[in-house]
Image (cartoon, rainbow, N blue to C red; front, side, top):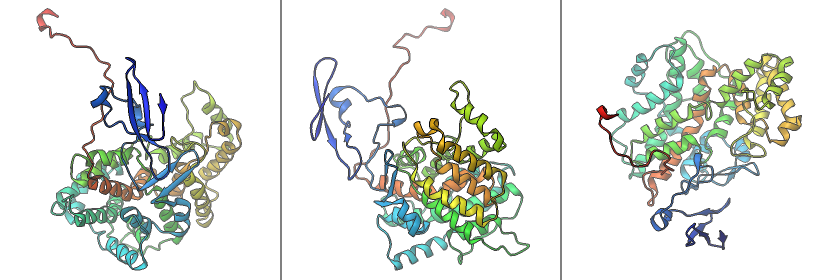
Length: 432
């Protein structure tokens, strides 16, 4: 194989040569355009897990895993985390540019005014068992939105695309809070238009009709930061699922519901829940050495959850940001004596200093800290992935809008390397 500036030239087993065009993005590695590979040369590519495949063209989010870079629309996530808010980041992801003061105010007001659910949707929750997993309810109720909002889902209409995006962003916290209230047997709490996004979520989660609820500003600040860091992450499993489902022209609410289901997997959105389960299993600071040894043993199935990342090879830029917030939350909420937090801090220090972890780049990632924060805020483990979905919802909406507006877009249809039986004749049952 040889490469020039704009083509790759490959020699096939039969000696024939093929040239494949090379395309360059704004930043990041070049890609080889293989769109005509099968048509012109009769072969497919093989890439399990799509680890080296660019599935689409996108201008939303950029990741450089080697350098630990994450940017939304060109803005480093560190700058957005320090200076912005989740609502402003949501506007950025949906509209490509940061808003003016007037645009931000209008957008924020639109989201606040669309948080109410149709009463029929609230009644839908009564059909679930009291102990149904919140992610199961979230997926089902989001899917049901297509039955309630079917008049404004013309994907070719920009106004309809905006309405869809605003509804998903605005109503998902209300759905999430209703799922939580069902689990704990409390009445649903209606949203309040005078509260901002994260304040409103805390209100719907923890307020009760019998007494006033005072929102902790540190809790709201922590949630806002977590939602910024989770807002988008390029072509991850759930985002790719939204794009794939949406590529068929399916109702966008059903595409988001598919993304919710994909996020539920423990290898994706369930990672922060797995961190807490791991800490509970370790149990005590005195047991850390034992479990670190187990993690190093190739024959032991135990794994340290919340360390390393499939994309980031040196460090997770989000982890550096959220680590500071994690310490702030524990200090401000007077939770610093919590045994699980003490255990997490000690495990963090061991991993950062241990040669084995350093050599393999097994650093604490964003999931390691986010679960600890959620627990400190009083959010149960079963709701961790739901919280992830709330932040990621705007990324899903942005990618759906980009995908559905692409004039070159096609229905997703991967191919395969077939390893089953070759052609064979049917044998009647009496002769087998």
